[in-house]
Amino acid sequence: MEERKPHRKIRTGTVVSDKMDKTVVVRVERYEKHPLYGKRITRAKKYSAHDEKNECRMGDLVTIGETRPLSKNKCWELLEIVRKAPVFDEAEGGAEA
Image 1 (cartoon, rainbow, N blue to C red):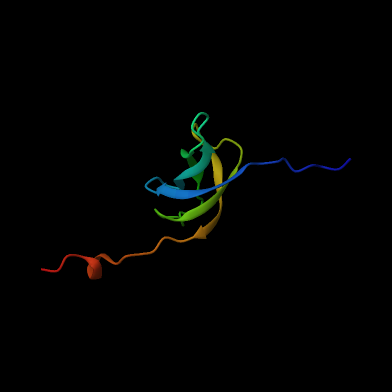
Image 2: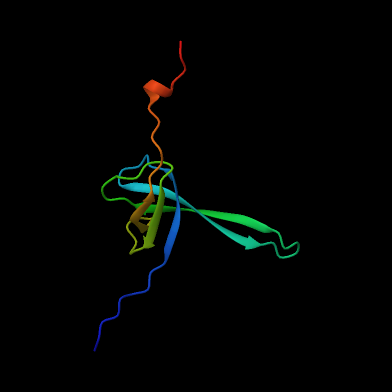
């Protein structure tokens, strides 16, 4: 009898918070058609995802995958960082006196 790997959902979104230890909050947007007017509208949901190495920061585009529950709100894990957010140096980019 062959063992089957469970089907797990995958989502892509933007990191909106990295303040917690080993956890990031990812905002995933999806588009749907308005039922009456037909205009395309944006729906968004935030997921708490496990980031074992604390390598994500705000603004990164990441892929997350479903996993077993790790805490009350966390049942997603970081799979990969698709695009890193640009880093702006505070010393150079600050207001000049």
